[in-house]
Length: 75
Image (cartoon, rainbow, N blue to C red; front, side, top):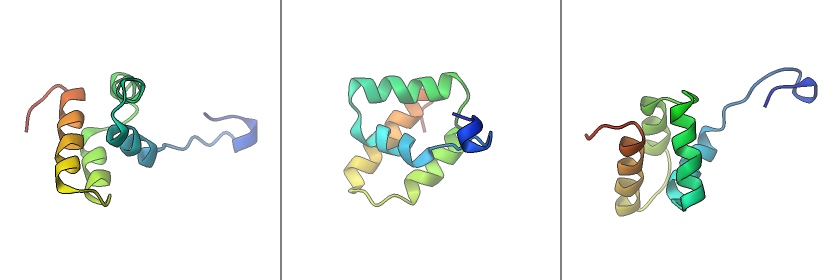
């Protein structure tokens, strides 16, 4: 959110987006889907952030599948 308290600068919380993909709860999935629907993130950016995040390989694949699902495409 940009406003007077942030000097009208908007910050994008990509780490938050990855954390929401990892958590995977219903409310987190709704959040990530809304990010995509409102064009507040890009698949390539999320994939780069995911690559920089320390995760178990199985969980990384689950998160990758969630990202692909939100963008409506398979690998």
